[in-house]
Image 1 (cartoon, rainbow, N blue to C red):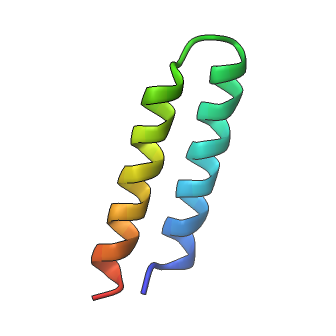
Image 2 (image 1 turned 90 degrees about the vertical axis):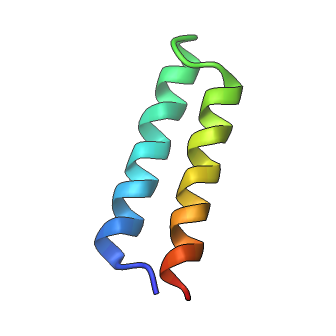
Length: 47
């Protein structure tokens, strides 16, 4: 199971990226890739 700290870090990172996206510094594709990586990390921890 994913640790609470890791989950928090993942969420915090996603929110930071979203803020950057609103400023057009990140593309939607980059943000989606980061979300995918967080999900992949979560999946590995659940095994």
